[in-house]
Length: 257
Image (cartoon, rainbow, N blue to C red; front, top):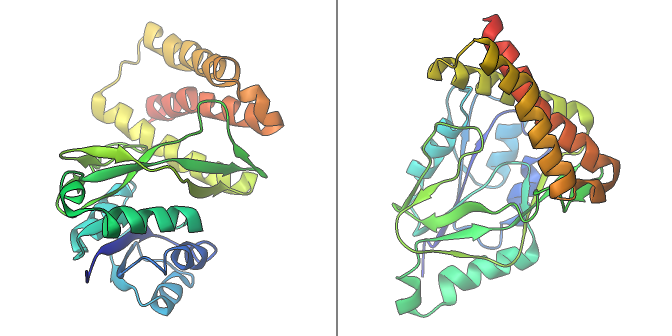
């Protein structure tokens, strides 16, 4: 069948990641769509090398807006939405191909999306504990059946109809260095503080105690102890500690505005 799979991405200064990402799907993508937020590096040049359809726009704080723009540009039957720092393993690529091209017609017509397990690379290792794996993400869906709410940092697509699970993992090379992690951390806490402002979150004493003290302690205990993040060595501690810090840092940014 022609025009089976669209691979769609939103990018901004991703020259270090994009080539590996697009190379990982070159055997299954019938079209590649890149919505770029005005990159100043070689992102566009790399996208062109992979024959991508490119649309250049602004780079909004909520990057899901550009992701949805890429989704809307897709013309194939199925859509695989990726981030530039993600890779489809050969096993995952094969599984996707089998699911959307080789299943019997009656089965294909009854499934509109697939959750994909994801392994997250953090400072030299994949995090396998701390509630981080399997980090299921809803990235493969039939065109017209999936859409991003465009409201939250870690939101999932909303897919109408039956959704199933794939077996093989997507690889997320999220944080190879601490400097990259801090850059993403600053961006996420800026966005969360904006959400607090939009919700008109309280600035009273009890709310302050909740976000500055109670929530980070609860999150660290849940991630590091209950979900055994300590088994991921020192990386597990760093991840649990900084992910817990997003509550007080986002809140402090909010009340200082």
